[in-house]
Amino acid sequence: MEASCIDYKDTGSFSPTVIDYLEDNPELRPFYSYRPDLNGFAALFENKNVIADREILVNVLEGQYKKTGLPTTHHSLLTENIALLAADNTFTITTGHQLNIFAGPLYFIYKIVTAIKLSQQLKEKFPDKNFVPVYWMASEDHDFAEINYTNIGGKKVHWWYEASGATGRINPETMRLALNQYKGALGIEKHAHELAEIVETAYTKFDKLADATRYLVNALFGQYGLVVIDADDHLFKKQFAPIMEQDIIGQHSFKNISETNEKLQTLGVNIQVNPREINFFYLLDGLRERLVFEKNRYQVLNSEISFSEAELKQEISQYPERFSPNVVMRPLYQECILPNIAYIGGGAEVVYWLELKSNFDYYKVDFPILILRNSGLVIDRETASKITKMELQPTDLFKSIDNIKNDWIKKHSKHTLSLSGEWRELTSVFEKIKLRAHKIDTTLAPSAEAVQARLKHAIDNLEKKLLKAEKRNYQTRLEQVNHIKTDLFPKDSLQERTENFGLFYVKWGQGFIDELVKNFEPLEFKFTVLTE
Image (cartoon, rainbow, N blue to C red; front, side, top):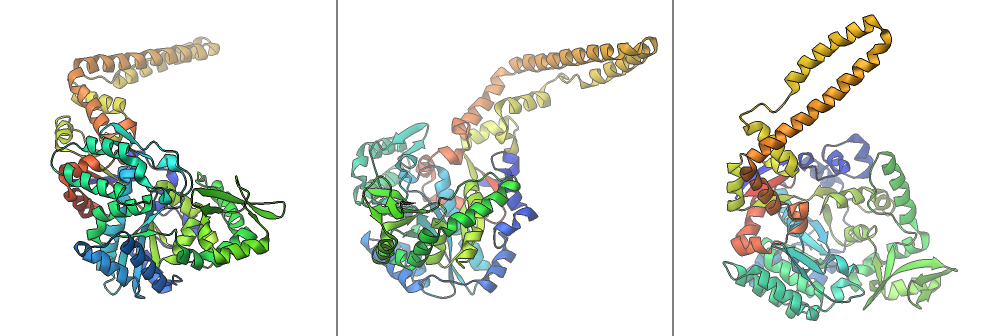
């Protein structure tokens, strides 16, 4: 594939806050730690304080992989990376996401590729240290409706099932219909059988969606040494228990993050998440419900479960795995159990992490460097040929269909469609008319201006009609724009936010992942257009 890059702001698809962060707007500096560049990492290493228990981390990970029959000798780098986590000079580069079936939309893949590539580049820059890419499974998330479908080749594959509780604990045994639909969408050409075997094994050989997702992600990325972590674990939660107890009783995160959000709002930042008084759920099989403080007791909503303060402390001490952090506390949990130096997220994630630094400071936990994940647009040979024939540039692709067509017509028409020159001549005439009217009667000036405004409106309408008429003359050529936009921007959205990776894998196999790793540049912060 050939790669070309454009600025994120030229895509019109990223928030002003994300652009401000990338461009180092001074107003945002109090809300993060170090800049997302090599100098920032060098400064971080001078002050990094790892609080994670490395021995527990390695033991739990080895146990999780052993349970699922992984890693294999084929993924020796993965085995090596897990062992390396025990060393003081090893650090993680982490990304996280929900357990979307079949890996959801493309950006699921892009997040992980960004973590892998950044780990490689940091090793080159800091050879005395080790860097392990990590995919943090959001296995405790309970929003099943957000993960139970994917879109592939214009078809929606849906897992119809009524689920409750943590999604990572759901048994995928009811996925057969969705699995058959997905495999059907893959077809039978090239690498279809290979991917069909991967998803068949993932969703039929394991009794937890978290383990199924680990298998799928490992099949795609294990050779790169990617470590998959499921933080729904007693030993991990035990490390976090002191903060859980402090925060539930003292409601510190609510105070800290609320104050930060007020400051961010004064800067015009669109707040992504708002904290609650208690930012934890109570977690059992089939149940993940909010914990609230009511009538001097800690009540689990939609249940009969409640605790006095003493009972709560006892429950946290004995069963820490029953307490699940919500979206504002999960990042803190992550940084407590991993020797992490960078978090890779999408635009909305980067913004919501900016809300959290004061809470990290309160609990004396290092805040990681925030990296905007790589974004990409994959263009196959057929669509690339259409783009070349239309003489379109990568930045043109992100414009609306009408704007692309208008610009194309203005560039390729044999006629001058703009009436701006003629309007300049008419404006000169009107200046003379207005001057004459003013000399005869000063009150006539507004009338002359009104006539000029009406004529300008008529000229603009005529210009639009000229453009519309020329579009009809080039109708066949301009139809190509519709096809290009439909192919590359399904549902009028970025390809990566809708389309699944499956058909690209069918076409190129593991080579698709290799090309992404080769061409993504995590620290350049450019949108990558990949053309076959």
